[in-house]
Image 1: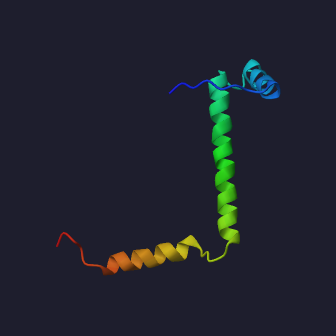
Image 2: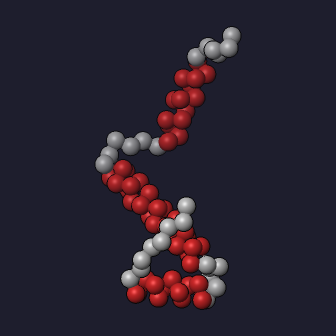
Image 3: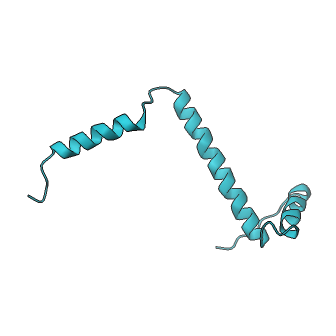
Length: 78
């Protein structure tokens, strides 16, 4: 869904520069990439905070236990 956004002059200049340099085909593409990078940064930060909070364990151990559990359960279709 299209959306209009008002940028401050420094941000507008950056956007104009990246489009003018042909690194992105349009302002929309540049903004989409910027938002993707922002989301990735937020996810990395959430990951770090989760690790720092403790109570974490390696995913391999969790997956091994789940696999054992579901192997041990009778098949529901039988």
